[in-house]
Amino acid sequence: MRNIAILGSTGSIGTQALQIAALHPDKLHVELLTAQHQWQTLVEQALRFGPNAVVIANADLLPNVRKALAHTDIKTYGGYEAIVQCATMSSIDMVLNALVGFAGLAPTVAALKHGKTIALANKETLVVAGELVVGLAQAHRAPIIPVDSEHSAIFQCLVGERSPVEKVLLTASGGPFRTLPAEQLALATPEQALAHPNWHMGPKVTIDSATLMNKGFETMEAKWLFGLADNQIEVLVHPQSVVHSMVQFADGAVKAQLGQPDMRLPIQYALGYPERLPAPELPRLDFGQMAALTFEQPDTVRFPCLALALEAMRQGGYAPCTLNAANEVAVEAFLQKRITFGQIPMVVERTLGHTPSTNGPIDLDTLLQSDGEARRMALQILQTA
View 1 (cartoon, rainbow, N blue to C red):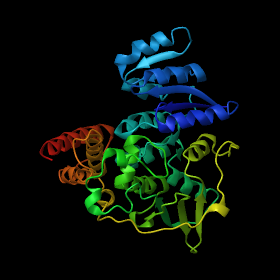
View 2 (view 1 turned 180 degrees about the horizontal axis):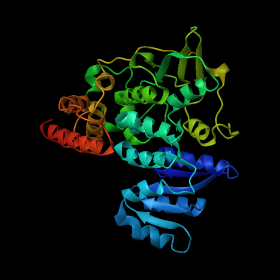
View 3 (view 1 turned 180 degrees about the vertical axis):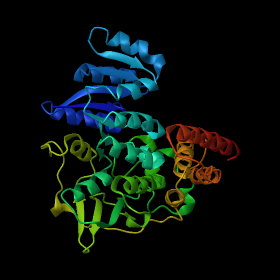
View 4 (view 1 turned 90 degrees about the horizontal axis):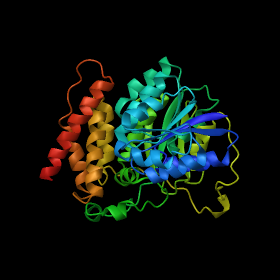
């Protein structure tokens, strides 16, 4: 039995992880659940799965949670710091970090320092603080198991391999605007951007997929997870989302991991690793029904966010942190219809121009400061957009 914490249990990844836990009650026990605002859903989850504790990040909603769970033995806490602290509970074996954005960093750091295995769905953790996080994982012998479908695919391709990696081929669906002309793309609405053709994800990740910023983030994530150089990662657009990524080895051989575009597959693989848990309920590929699997180069002219992310990765230092903060601000503004789709990369690029120089070691405190400064700068730029 593996005791798991699910940080962000009411979101897309969290709810699908609970579906997996329900399929394997003899293998997976839910020990901790956390949510940001959706206290009623959190309570429903807690009543079904009986965790040791729950945390509602919006502390103003804690009285509602406590009242609803008063008849149970479930411990209830409120506030972001409670998430960070509860992620280190001694009873937890694995922390599934499905938080959105920069908020996922501090719980990951805390859990790693306590030797917890991390099932990582929060890519910003490695985008912002890859060197710090990987160093902590190594120092505390705390494994990081990727949950993103692409990184799970790479991870699976590398299991049992001892040969050095020549190149990783990171696939991207291309999002809902892959073939949309540039003049229409700039004026795309949030409703259009949220209509992803293949994947069911939360709104932030779905918008990042539409701008291809998500693939830039995933390139950085792959760099840190697998110890790769920048030039060892190639992004390929694969509209069918069947090949989730590939690894090329020194002899030219290429391994690929294929599957239906269903996030429950990589979630289950991470939660069960190193065992492959049976899943007759999950979808299978029908190769007889596939007309073609196609690949193409990404268009960084129409999708400049990918180019901005790759440049931030090349710069290193605080640039990835600045990139992430600016993108979070810009995406939120777009979802609220305060800026256009075409203005997202503008806000990011201008904010990146104010990235502070790297003086001294980068630690959690300096990253928090850099994140705050970048957000303030992005908000100022928004006011003139």
